[in-house]
Image 1 (tube, rainbow, N blue to C red):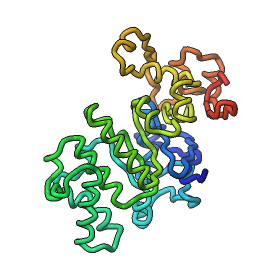
Image 2 (image 1 turned 90 degrees about the horizontal axis):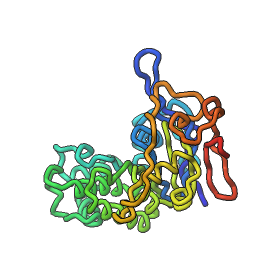
Image 3 (image 1 turned 135 degrees about the vertical axis):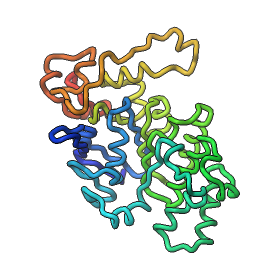
Image 4 (image 1 turned 120 degrees about the horizontal axis):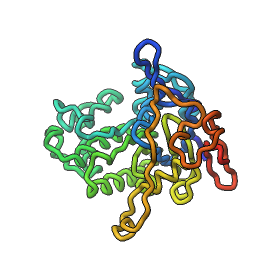
Length: 318
């Protein structure tokens, strides 16, 4: 298994005021193999999107590093770095309503990457745009239209075509289905699966829905308040969670069968998520954890390997 991308103790803090910082991402180490889909899950505000953007250089790194195909990427990107790496690493954004420029036609939006990163002429770019629009399930005649003329699902397909037209090796999918109707979500997920198989893509798939992440991912990483708490094969993490936070997330996920859901005892996470400005000592989940011990409030647990389970867990229970 060849590692394509690896973050080593990646940290991203945002300064607010003179002497306060938001601990958005803290010391996250994660490797992603070629042609692998890693699902990243956690509550809103857990740092998932910030982590994805820091990997791609859209946020400057506060600490740690990112290595792509053996090359250590810059801590702070310069324009030449974006020019060099954008064709190899792309992002599909969460909101299809705000991530497309309303003043540009679909043809201009999808073809912009080729205009910036290739030497192809206008005719060749137009042909590529038409091919990719059809590949994501749209009509080549849509090139002259504007984003407001499309539904949410169609706009997300435009965003996918924009990212894929450069044929990148690695793509961060930042909750690409959360703003879509349930009927459209499956179509977008299936499209991403087809593109992954045909292009040999490597994906970091960020989402709230654990069942969806289990369906699309090879491995699942669980993030809480900027730190990884569990990592392992997607099915294993979903059906046999080891960290108390993961267990509660799985149990709070609704069942698709109404009869099963009606008789099920749902578990909600108690308490409030701590402020990322004032991160508590010890385990960050301790104030909400039903199994918290004294050591949890004093000592930060490290991500350790449970060898018999092929799982990494940051919890004092282990």
